Length: 103
Image 1 (cartoon, rainbow, N blue to C red):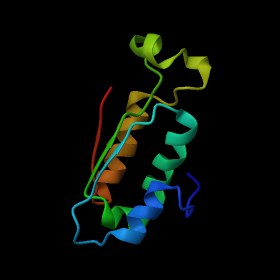
Image 2: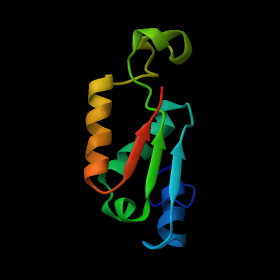
Image 3: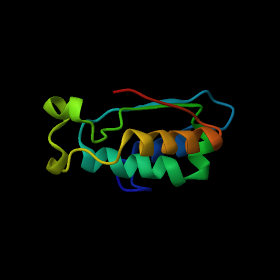
Image 4: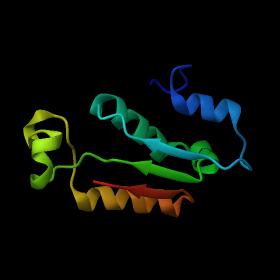
């Protein structure tokens, strides 16, 4: 979903919900080319930080044990490390979003 596009789920959130609503987002599309831009949008959009109370995301990181399920490290289906992922989730929490991941 392109930022601002009607098909982008975050566009719907910003158009339909207010800060006082309780909003939970689970991002698990299993297509990196779709998930990555949405995750980046969540990271950088202060309006989403105000709206989203809880954010769940299966961040597909480069982890040897998960290669059989997520693809090899050179497949383009994974990115970053667990440490980098934890830093991103910590940043979201610092922005006021209760962010959680699972693997």
